[in-house]
Image (cartoon, rainbow, N blue to C red; front, side):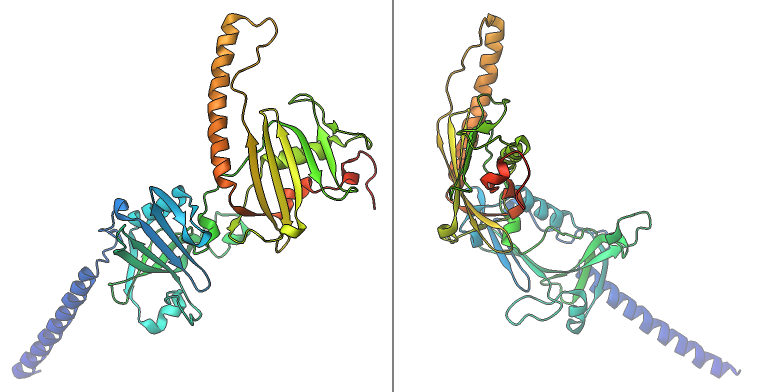
Length: 375
């Protein structure tokens, strides 16, 4: 190789190296501008105190959560109180989310990562839109949550972990171009189903004295007991009561939960049956149950009565024991009055409950009698 050829070769190497270095710095600049540094927070400017509204939307559903008068509410459920713990939990997860991967992905590939913006005519691959706003309605952040990334865990014996366990989420943040980020949290609570965000506190019937199912004569029954821990019996003849059926009905009332709230308060009212429970605390709960869809029931209730303000002393009670019991009674009364106040506020709504939860309350009279069950 001649000296001239060598110099031309070196010049070509320098030109190619310079071009590569330029491209490197260009990519690095774009990477820095995207705010996608590995280990950096996804939303470094987000402040929890600024968030007063959150909207989530997917291909089929939408929910809007708004803070009004210091109470978060679900707009699609007529302003029913929302679960603040769930809302704050999701916001904090977004605040703490850190980038573990970042790459530029063109719009044509977004469906593969479930990052298509939901809306009219949404196609396959639609993600979940999450919008956060402040009290004035000013947008704080908008993003589309896409496919959940899985991580292999050979030590996990569960069948649904065969393909891996949720370990992250693909996210497309508005204002970040086609930069797709992967964060280390699957954000599985970020769903657009309104019922998932409702506050779960519900009425709870305790210390039941009498329980009655009203309806057709062949199906109606009324059971009672003289003491809180006493044995249940039919209030008026009709055979020997099955203790297990009575206990099952009693436990069902004290453990009810709902899956959703409905706004049409006339749903199934013509087919409703009525349960009435009187308690040792001088409270009366009236519960109406009507068939809904998929075996569920629509439940409506109200509570009436006032708990006793004073405690009935026990025979030959010592002064020191009386003082202790008076204190316990006062504390219990305070909690009970607060619970009743909340229950009365919740009684204006109609609820969807699972059929299996109320099944012990709808047993016909023949099923409450001890002995062979009818075929």
